[in-house]
Image 1 (cartoon, rainbow, N blue to C red):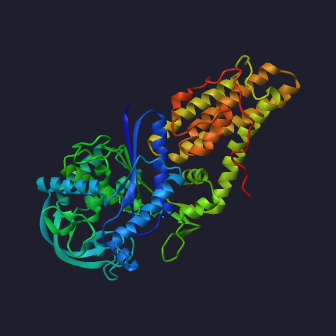
Image 2: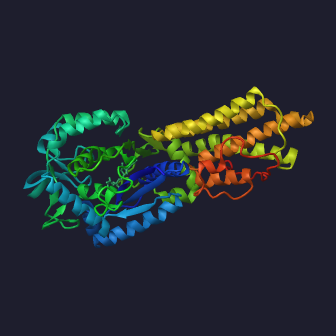
Length: 512
Ligand code: MSP
């Protein structure tokens, strides 16, 4: 089986999960489920980023040890993922022994490659972003007077200490070459151009160790230094795969690494340069998605308006949340979360379009034929058009998810559903029944049921439970969506005359 590896960022444990964290993880889950169903040997990794000054400070402010804070947040994440039907294959903690081994091995690789040297760091640091800034960069960004971080606009602090450096500047040309030679490496394209411009403006060597706090992984052979949290964190993508025990781990390079736009520079530049120095292959693709606002406002701790997944789950089914997040905003764009928009999409696309097609089709089948598919007659042009549209959907969804165009994939599925609803109107099964045209009635109902079955199958990665319920009604047997492959239920024509469907019961009742 062909391997497929998808990752999410690992989330800081200084705070509880919020909307931004579940967004990436749900997106990764859809890709993982789709690939598993397409018979790929799939590995889906998520986890938490436990080290660094930011987490240490958060723990200090609560008067607890960093590991105690980490344990409590980890528990939240580990409880949350199953509730959101996230099917990760592994969960990496950066405080784990396997990860520490991976990071220290990575450090030694970089050192042996001559990419690390000792020096003295004297510039600025942003703790919330765990980012270094040079005076010149602060000046260019007009942040020098106010001493704020150009990314998050919070205060930067002066850092003067002995430090190890990574020769990032030496990778400038190779990075540009790699990005130019691999047009799919960084997506979306606007972000790719942004990264190229950043590299072209000149890369500085990167300070990669700290001596003024201790919550991190010690530098091998010089324990007074802890490894810079980003070098530590980025290595999770291979430490979880068994690096260094596995020299080039199975599943590496990743097929796609999903991240938010704010951490693209760390992935596209630092991570790529680290891998180049360590002589490991680069990921095939890094996709930077946009940011959510909530009801028009930026989520922030100070406003106290961070949207918590537990609150969302109290009112909405996980599948509805999954659907909305991926349907509402093109992946890669910024977007706004609002409860009105959620309800509107739910009622129009799930309740009205899909729910209606399912209900009316299975109700008519029940009413006119006791729920059983009958012998069909000759196919007409409109039947062939529906079959072709369904086949097109299967191909298109695969292609669209291949480039992480979740909203297009869902729109493509919706277009088949709308086609199905038009087909009902055009063929008016109730009139066929009234006229006693049994053969044509059977044919029309058969086409509707097969359409529903194949739509349900395509929806599984997005809405595993709801799509499973849909399919269970069509198949009249419980369908286990986490083990189902696309080929198990075949293509058009899998259901045979005599197949019995269940009576419909609403999968997407209208929301008031
Ligand atoms: N620990 C680092 C990542 C290390 S990966 C080797 C980190 N953690 S984080 O918890 O601060 O953020 C994780 C992700 O959440 C980032 O990809 C970020 O873009 C995303 N989001 C945070 N707020 C967000 C929104 N408002 N909207 C969408 N995503 C957002 O960064």
